[in-house]
Image (cartoon, rainbow, N blue to C red; front, side, top):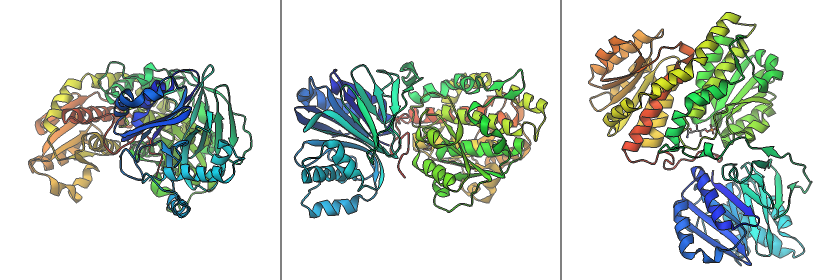
Length: 614
Ligand code: AGP
């Protein structure tokens, strides 16, 4: 969850590392630190943002001038509060080894006890510090070892997840890195190398990268890198070319990444469908699953595992696949699936959905499903991510880098991928060629309809004014709009800190109606589908209890304006594509409420973009 950057080459390391940290701040931002080698080890670290570290560096960083190798870290606390002393890098007692770590050392308390018994003292409350002392103990115990071997031997004692970078003034021209469960990428420049927890800090320097796999280590020097397994077996690694530009990960004129990403959706949706939706032929072409399509169609059952927003996309996937392909679908929280001994076997297909492709629970669900013999398919946004690499087949969402912690464009891209998948699974089985062609035409009209909804931004901002002081908000929808209600509520709570709940509208009577009074805004997603009149009755029920009603309805619906305090009109569309439209005003509403409340929407408190720990 934290961000890691390393540099070794011929350029000044400190500014490069700082710049890299800024690109990774979305991964964690409660403290930051840097260590460089200038003959001796110099470390600076501080609680707070990378900006704080930058200030500290400008005051006390002269020792870091002219130095061409170092490592840096931005932290999202797991063990120990956000503070200067818990910030990374951590050092050994003699101050000649520095380490940064992403992940969790699960057996850290046993190791800590053991090391304490041997006289080691600890400066921090982190699990990570244990690792640097362990390396120190092993290296001191055998002076014939080098840093690489000491790290390798230390890792054999470690249980848990890690992405680490280690440097030592005893071997000043190398960075030793290792990965198990937490991603690490090496960027290959001209006479220089970059290391990072994802490609964002690397892309402005080089588009050539090597992704380390779990259980691999690398030694990176100024002129080469070698990759071996932790068991010391050499590995040939494929060099991958990154296909996203720096411009894509910058804000492009918008005030926040989240707003930029909301507005990018029409273009992203086109990208997701490009080459896959063949309108003329009335079919979809899904390269990533082509070889497995028959097996997918024969699935006795599909289980979708994901977390958070991706789980909401999974719920929509359930509705789509069951409606079109008539294959039974279950949707599980990955965190529950992995621990409840699920009944899954060779006849099942497990689909894991993840924007980052690194979510720890989703990855664990994937591995469990594989162990149990299921065919595992991935839907990921980040190319080359662990989930993408560990699934047998899959589809990328092609939404481009999503930086805002609140997922927006990745969600709609996931829903489009699931729509295409549902149609591919139906072909030749459950619905006719003409019906598939019609659905594809509906899907292809979505980007233009989304652009029209984005034009309502000012109206939605004005409605947000009426919500900004609310303490609770209820989101209600039915059918395809039920998962959208959940997603709208999640968006609001994660960035504005207003308590919000999503419910199937008909469930209101079974409990939440008790909450309704004049202080309770209720957001209804009331598009014209088979349950429309029933949703209207729910609106009446809320109004008669003086609740405030905001409705998302279809253009031309006059009836609803009589009942709701505010109506956001969206274009007409068929049921299965409706979520792609109804979610847009809810994303904008959450964004504006949060900014009106002065919240940092791109970096909401306590959250991180990619949850790579349990
Ligand atoms: C979305 O706005 C959230 N921040 C979060 O729920 C996210 O969707 C979840 O952590 C899953 O992430 P993933 O898609 O990268 O696996």
